[in-house]
Each structure stands twice: as structure tokens, then as C-alpha cells.
Amino acid sequence: MKTFMAKSGEVEHRWWLVDASEKRVGRLASEIAVVLMGKHRPTYTPHVDTGDHVVVINAEKVAFTGKKWQQKVYRWYTGYMGLRSETAEHRRDRRPELIIEEAVRRMLPKTRLGRAMLDKLKVYPGDEHPHQAQQPEPMKLGV
Image (cartoon, rainbow, N blue to C red; front, side, top):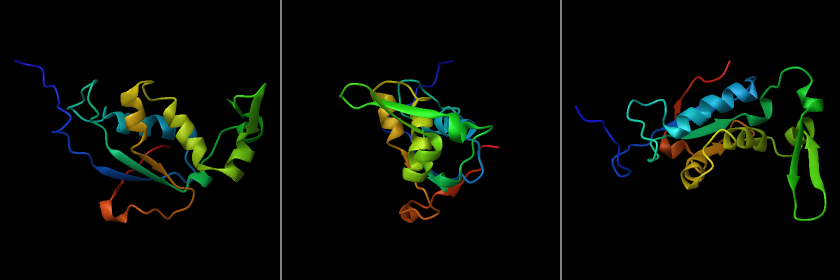
């Protein structure tokens, strides 16, 4: 019996639609990362992108537990002295799609393949998205 190894040209990528309203960020991000990597399929191969495309809508309605909206701080380096930072509440008001994108990005592999997986994630703050032509199927994720 031989082990099955998927080849990059043979994989069929599906499109999924996820509604993020009232979902916990971490739980939602971990399930999205599994779908992007392709670990939900029996044909998962570590060195091939076997994952699917995920369209996330209502990113501005995600939820954190406890006081994370005020206490969670996102920091980044700008190239100048010191770090820029903002709270999760400020980021939700400014660019809510970054909350989910950053959470998912940090759960994917830190390689070229991981960056290709992240390109298949599309996050939108409202309930409108421009991917109707791909006919994404609704997927129930998160708690």
C-alpha cells in the first residue's frame, strides 16, 4: 500500500463563506486556518497547497471574551524608533478585517506556502462581498 501524495495541479479548491458575526476570534481563526491549510481533507499533503478559499463577512461583529476589547493591544514596527500600538477596540473601529487576518496569519506556516494560503483568505467588514461568481458555499465555523 502506498501513501497518497497530492500534486499541486490535481487539487480542486472550493470556496466557503463564513459569517463571523458574534463568533469568538481565536476559535474562528483556528478553524479558518485548518481549512486554508487543507487539513480538513483526507488528501492533505504538507508540501502542497490543498486548502480551500475562505470568504469571511461581518468581520466588524466578531467577539472577544472578557475585557479584551480594551486590554488587548496590537503592536507593530514602522521602521522608526519605538513601536506603534492600538487597542482591539480602536482597530475594530478603524479596520475590523485586520483582527481576523492577523489571527489567521499567525496560525499558518511561516513559509512561502503559508503566504500562498493566506492569499486565499478574503475578509470583509460588512455582509457584502464581490465573490458571488465563485458561488461560495456557507460553512458553519466557530462557537
